[in-house]
Length: 89
Image 1 (spheres, one colour):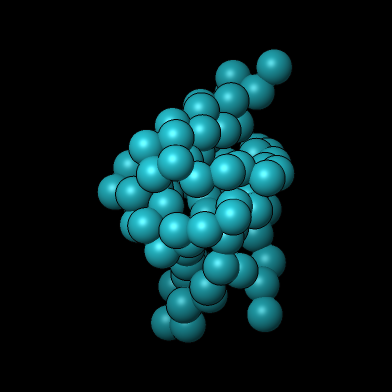
Image 2: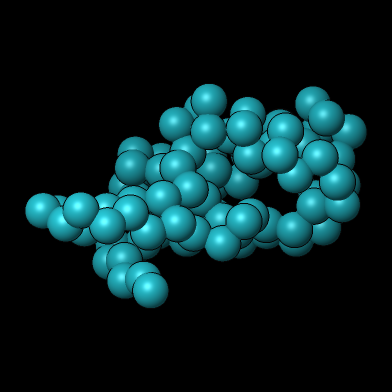
């Protein structure tokens, strides 16, 4: 379950070190923003929501758990889903 590679959206709640966790996930290729093809506007996701272009949902959760463990952060809850269509305001 969750092994299909594609666009993955991951959202999480942690107890502290939000900036450090997000920065480390961004180093692994996760993004907090996107643009529609041909558009100039950049859309930013909510603070603890990221996406990746080539990842499985299972691997995304493993990455998040690993980073949280690295910083001794409590991962309160998280969800990772395959996301094939984005729309934003």
